[in-house]
Image 1 (cartoon, one colour):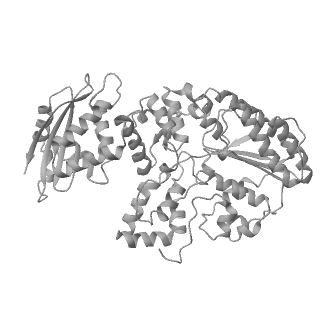
Image 2: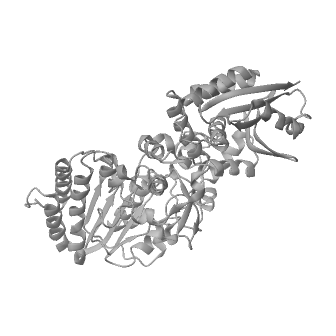
Image 3: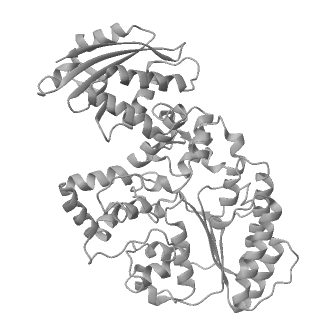
Length: 530
């Protein structure tokens, strides 16, 4: 990698460290300047984990500390902001692992005490976090109006979302945050972040002056990178990646976009790239390894548990959309009660970054969601396959790919049949449901073989085609019909014709019959065209 390229920081969310070390910083201070322009404003912003929330909080802290030297050349430095220093209360819940209300109260008290020390204050309030919070705000406000910054406010509740103490934890936070309303007259600015938003009757009950900008199109690209920001700030890495991969510029950028772009945080808003995926792709991946990066930085168990609770079929269920009120009434502290509620589960997957906005029907009040990109889609499917098979998806995929490359249809079908034997089913499965399972499995084989679902021909659509090098597979699926009927359709509609001109290929016509009562592969028939 060229020595002229600026370093990329992905593990440290300190704005001061990032600027002082000369790392790449994608300038978002124009948005921040707009946020802080009016005194006394309170804001809340939800975004998926590792999406730049902590860096935004750290940037705000540096601004209110008056560290103008760190902002030289950035958008906010071109404004008339006065760079006045303010007393700051910064609470970061990212390291809070408490599981009971009592322990959370103690953790908050200790954090408030540590904030008070640099101001040479000893808090005398009772051992109740809200009382000590009130005292701290009052005593430091003699030095000027107070700035309150709260990062990952929902982590302690989210970590215990399905636990028996979640209600008490939420109530503790609710009482704590009521101080913001009671002391609003001495506050300069309040900014809170989290992955999930709570209903206003939950943690934020009574905070009617809290401005939720999570779905505000004016701030839709405040976190994450737009296409223009990616190409401008990572230009050197992009050129190096193009050179090292041997790809054309347009093809290279298209692949980066397919893997890591696609997040939309307001209807009609421009999409953005996941910042941690981009950073790790250009640093750890050297701009060449199109792997999954963001998805590997956190646990997916709760996400998959919720998806399982409604037996989510992302190819069909998302077509119905999600009611807008699912977001306004969402409360992660009531997540266990949301099991089986398709709208609430979609709202959860949206906020955690597994789904993103695709469109909005204002008349119906319905959001339509989708996977943001290939990285997230494949990771979701891998987790799904691992659950189905009770073993690592990578082992299953390797077995399938090896069989396909060798022309071992028997081995391929044995593995596929074993997968179907493990998949939990709703009653009344139909042909598209069976096809979805095969599509999920084959999508994960896509890095090793060429897979096309619903492959269009002049006479119809092939359910699935697979190019595995020397062997090509043309597959047709039928539910509660014979494998012979599926094979006959392939032949009658001449599905294989589009592959006959490819020399050196052995073409496998494969009819697969599923049983909706046995929930498995009932039969299969193959005809090989040499």
